[in-house]
Amino acid sequence: MSDCLFCRIAAGEIPARIVHADEHVIAFHDVAPKAPTHVLVIPRRHLASLSAAETADAPLLGRLLDACAGVARQLGLASYRVVVNNGEDAGQSVLHLHLHVLGGRGFSWPPG
Ligand code: DGP
Image (cartoon, rainbow, N blue to C red):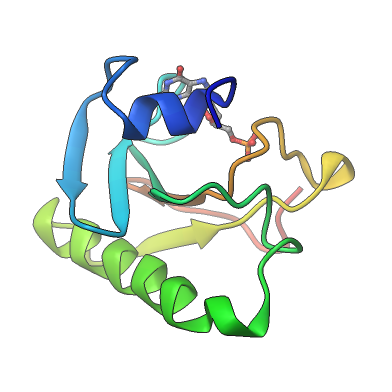
């Protein structure tokens, strides 16, 4: 989608600090980090949210989680949190599915 921020990052039209890229998935540092390490993992294909994913997307969803683990390994994170904000009330501000990989500090539970 030409008007989607994360589609434009995936297409290389908007610069980002990329940490991983493959045929299906791209990962880059969040511009407003909420932890010492804060990376966003996204599908190259536009999916507005986790809710928009269908059962047929399960392999892609698996790739996204696998990429989160790979990014954490690559960046030396032993403990980290993976977050998906789905919908406005959950804090989703960009309507392109993204998984947050947060690390480098402790996290409380339950989340706010
Ligand atoms: P969420 O609130 O869950 O939709 O997370 C969106 C995240 O995207 C938020 O942590 C900030 C990040 N973000 C927004 N615009 C940009 C951008 O232009 N570049 C990068 N790298 N991150 C962005």
